[in-house]
Length: 99
Image (cartoon, rainbow, N blue to C red; front, side, top):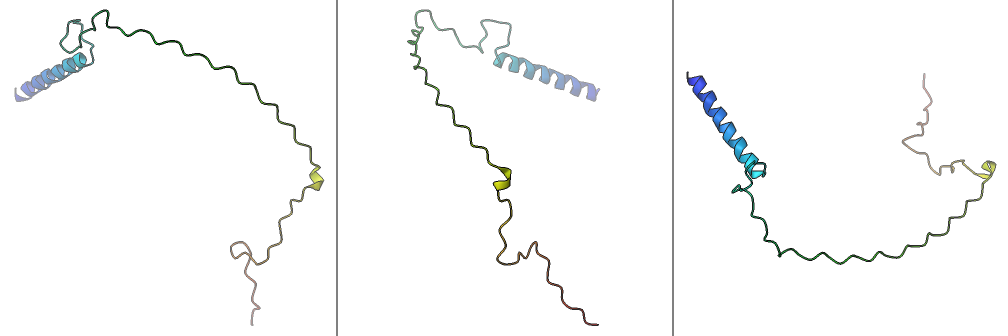
């Protein structure tokens, strides 16, 4: 019986919260609800704003010239020679083995 009473109380509390939330969201069926603000009286509407003039169209820029084709054999892709060995990529010099 105690569990049933707790279930009924929780159900009623949930229904109350749902009803209040619905009224706060102006979803109530009553048009004269206390939760909704009153409509503005007629005649206090603001006049429409004057139309904003459209700016003149901007002329399109000249098309960019096409780059000249480069002969692939003329491109030097060889890396520059390293002045000092790179400790991260160059292997360590081998030491002579004694034996």
